[in-house]
Length: 467
Image (cartoon, rainbow, N blue to C red; front, top):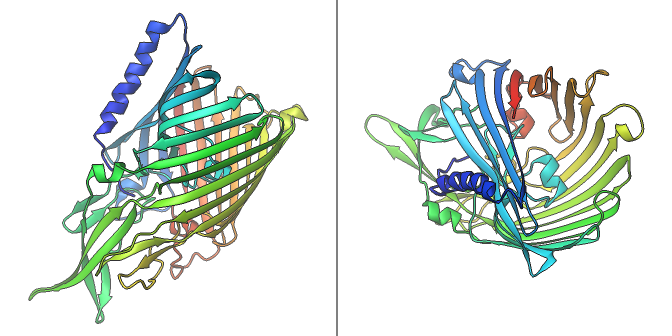
């Protein structure tokens, strides 16, 4: 994943500060809510990497700010997330939301300008596929979802109908840990991103590969068009509800092309590979059908993704994205509605057909699946719980638990966290993430998510202050 330092990032930060301060001038007519949380988290991985000791433990400081304001005519909001990894000396700053809305013509219509999170698809929301909305992703287990950036026109009638049109000529792709190109090597200081191979066998000997990252201009990347339509019918809180969405937009993950050649000199032989990122568009459609009771909710989701793969130039290889058809079902049970236990239990099922990444050569022939899959899970179910821990008061001790099994990968993942709130504004957490597959042998070279990261079991502890 490639981190792109956009010039407009400073503008977003300045706009967020102005948004927070300007509403104070309108405090008499506008209600506003400002929240923040400061966190410190220490993480240790059970499997040690001897070559990069800094990747075995991390100390992460983060700050989350959110500001929402509403009035009779205008409303808006923003979210700001910043963090620093002390061991790696890496920092980041993300703006998942920054938007303003106003009534247009009638009370039932409004226009929103900026970046805003939206519920386009339940599959995208729960399974973190990033088909619809981009992510800031340094850790695939806890990605930061970000809204689309543009202008949105919406018409709605309460509990009956909502429909809208979204348009943008400004594209912000997935971002994450920085990739450094140095001395012919691509270096990524992140256990969750696999660096490309540094050598390959040639005539029985190991031959070194030298990489060059050819970064396109920022303007060429961000100057992309998106058009989307959506409609919702029914009451989302009680009874039947239907949500339909369609879009033609850029794929959030940049697609790579490769140009390799073998260089010979008197001293050595090595491979020279140039990597060039591209923006590829796709047509995506999704539908969520749900029914809500007072004590539970069932939702069935469908998503179809059709990439418009690019034609590779002569002598180049190009990543080719396979089409995706996804089905998902989820049932949520709200225990507080049927008992004295104030928790929530959910069970989900996901089936995805397609989603592999192939390398196509310039003659149109399909190569090997060198890059794995577009999504982490393809045939999975999960069970999750959120609520009080072992009968403790929810205000004092809570837990979040998720067990996932992917049948196609023959592997499982367990995420568990316990959080204690001894006083009003402070919380302390202890958690673990465990990933495993049936075949733990070194011969298992599967590029599926669980197998690639089966050495990333970890435990963590943290403290947070809410203000």
